[in-house]
Structure formats: C-alpha cells, structure tokens
Length: 173
Image 1: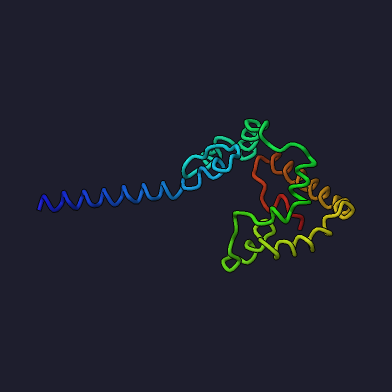
Image 2 (image 1 turned 60 degrees about the vertical axis):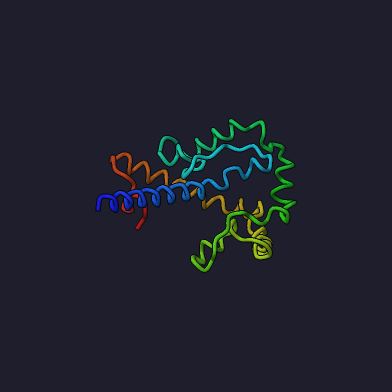
C-alpha cells in the first residue's frame, strides 16, 4: 500500500510539473518574435509581458510606456514624414494586424477598427476617414470643451465634500 501511495504521489507531482512547464513554454513561445526580426524590444516577463510593474500597481501604464520609450528612444522612428508614410500612405502594407478577434463572440468589440483585417478594414477606413476632417473636428471641439468644464465642476463638488464622484454629483437632472 505504501508503495502504491508513493507511486501515486510521484505520478501527481510529475503531472503537475508537466502542466506547469507546458504552460510556461506556451506563454513564452513568442518572446523572441521581435529579436528574430532584428527589432529592438524589451524582454517580457512570463505571464506579465512588459507590464509587470503596472499589473502589480507599482506604476501606471503611461509611466511604464514612457520609461520604455525613453530607454529605446534612439531606436524608434522619430521622423514625422516617415511615421506619416507608415501610418497613412503605406496603409495597404500595414493594414493586417497580428491581433484579431472573432466578431461571432462579441460583434461590437470584434468590429472595432483596430481589430479589422483586409478589405473590410479598408472599406471601413475609407468610409470613416471623411468624418475626421480638420473642419469637422474643429466643429466638435465645443462639445469637448463643454464636457471638460462639466467634468471639472463635478470633480470640484466631489472633492469639496471629500467624497468620490457619483451620479448625484456629476449628472444634471
């Protein structure tokens, strides 16, 4: 009986160790993606990626991205014309992103512009581009200004009373 329990214990430990190793290798399988292509990158941490500090709430996402940007500022594309060529003029080369999402699971999230691919992305971009002309953006600025002022008033009321902003503070009835 003791021999059976020892072999069962060994078997369970072996299975658990195999699962842990398998999970580790599954999570880290793409960690050298950019290195293989000769692109400078920040080596990620297993299970956290490059956002370990943010996940552990030691820093904000903005501070983390700023730190990464500062560390690699000499390796980044900083020429505005080159960035414009990549993001606007050469869009047919860069239109398919690695990350995608099946719209059958969540049609709203799955049809967001950054997640679309191929001709559907191109069609949506073509129809959406005229909406964001500089003239139309300037015409919408007053809405942003009004919302910003309402937010400032809401935060002033909430902080004056020492409470967190809630519906009764922010929404006008």
